[in-house]
Length: 175
Image (cartoon, rainbow, N blue to C red; front, side):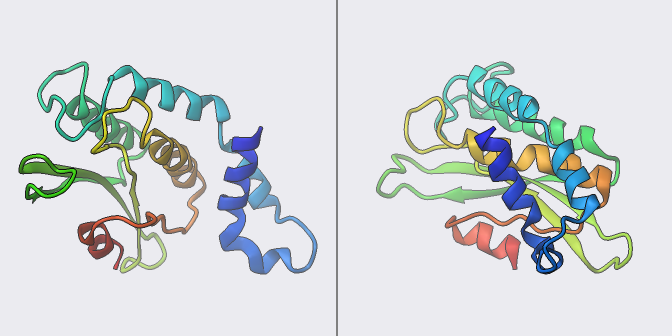
């Protein structure tokens, strides 16, 4: 329930102007009710099933490690709508600090082109990897973006998802 309340607040934020008149927009209610706490939980469990998503874990194993998680997220985004343009944003990070060796990094990015304004896009991406050895780090980022991405395509919501903090690469994608 707490997760659904959080998603309600996140989903309703763009509609704050409508909330000033103290009534709830029926469309907002419909969208929030479409968010499935069960589905978010299933997403988190699936991400946990890959074992570690450490950036140095397996890239090629079909069932475990960061590569398997990345491919699963890609396939999930692709399954939501033929309109979603899903791709990998790939770059290299040099050895420094917690990065113990040079490593290739990948964001899974889904772009939903505008319907009324073709020059506007919704960009959906999430944090699913970690530079620390843990099973759960980063899963909530994907779980909390994955389900709204599915719901928004169905309801044609015009919204942008950014990521807190992040690398210069992610900031460039948000610009």
